[in-house]
Amino acid sequence: ICSPWFGDLDSNPETIQQQFDTSAIPADQAPAHGFARNIMWQLDNINIDSAELTQLTLSLDTQDNAPSYWPYSCRLQLTISIGKQLSLSLIVKNNSEQALSFSNALHTYFATGDIHQTQITGLENLNYLDSIDNWQTKTQQGSVSIDQEVDRIYQGTDKQETSKTVSLIDKQWQRVTSITSQGSNSGVLWNPWVDKSKQLSQFNDDDYQAMLCYETANVMEDCKLIAAGDSYTLVLTIDSSPLN
Figure 1: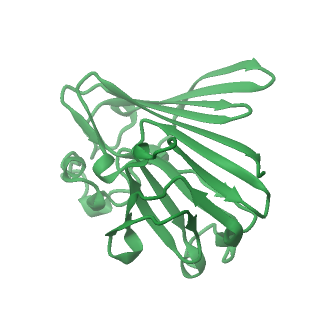
Figure 2: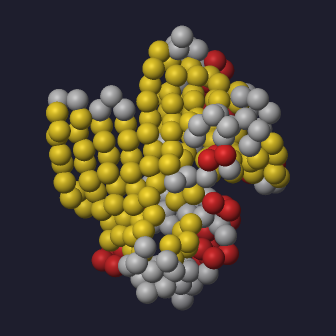
């Protein structure tokens, strides 16, 4: 879980950067993707509804656990539903007395049979920021095929004409992984390809051929502003079906 910012702090909107207390540590020492993924969460509940559905609820209260550079009080609650589908529901409640601005992303990695035989649909005609090419804004033409390093932030994902679903079509494994979201208007697509794979820890040199990262997100212009006492919900559902 990336929160309350995404990537490097200085690449986030100014409203998020201004909330960081630089008297605690310099901004350039802020951890990538925020602090929520580096703090132990509390397991609040396990509910087994049936043999086919298990739900876990976890929470993180920043009033008790946030680092010194984050002076805002908010509570994050994550509900994980595991069954025929995998569903993640992330609720952010602002317990501060002032408005809270934040970005977040559900950092999902997907296994693929062969990245050369994998296509991504559902992003057609959307604008994206290409971090590999000096953060230029480009427009997606057709489906996405990966044949080089990719690091893109797609904007306007809730404006897709058909539905808010991104599909990973895996011809090697003959399956379709469907990623459906609510409360998200941006998505991040990433594959390190050859050279960067060799630089990553806990990542084999050829692992790029068998993985793809697509993150349901609220980043860049899609960052959220929560009034004092209000909350915001991001929902991700992942489903898998045979490729017809």
